Length: 270
Image (cartoon, rainbow, N blue to C red; front, side):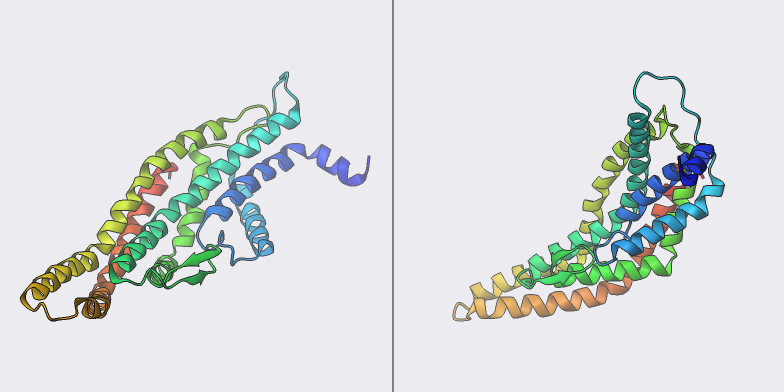
């Protein structure tokens, strides 16, 4: 047995606790905004996960020892690590709800304005996106950082250990609690659609009124080439409505981030 193996064996409770902390932190980093984007190199994500785990480790109660059990210790350890990863994923996914709602709102506005054909490369999610979803995603990111939303994520991760203690090698309370929290998160994910509707409503309703006006005009002036007028009018009027609603959208994003923080931290027993 090498000196390194002897060191791990003699300090196995501390090593086990750090591995579980690292598993939950890694799940949060992978699913959180910015850190989990494909634009962030994998090495940077590893460094962030390890650094946060080192900082959080002194604040966490050690994992309970493994009781006598018939299944192999490796299997129980993998189950415990899976439960911790799930808890971390839920913490990160909770912060993605606002971003998903804003991207959906941008798609709805673009469909009404006729800009859905334009496609851009999305470095955050590693795919293609349109103009307005990319713009709204960037706006939410700036508001999120300005309000220290990344600090809120770290606080939620630390607070999660109060309600969901570390799972030991032979038990997985964190995994069971994570499943219950995942169920509640899936129910809360329904809030993506109200967010998208409230963000896109000014532009969509305004463009709907524009369609009604253009329909009346086409009836009054049958000689007018309606197809040559509709697209420019919809684009210009939609862009004007979108620019006028930007200050309200910034306030709306700040309100949702603050509301999400008030809901998230008590959920984790702050």
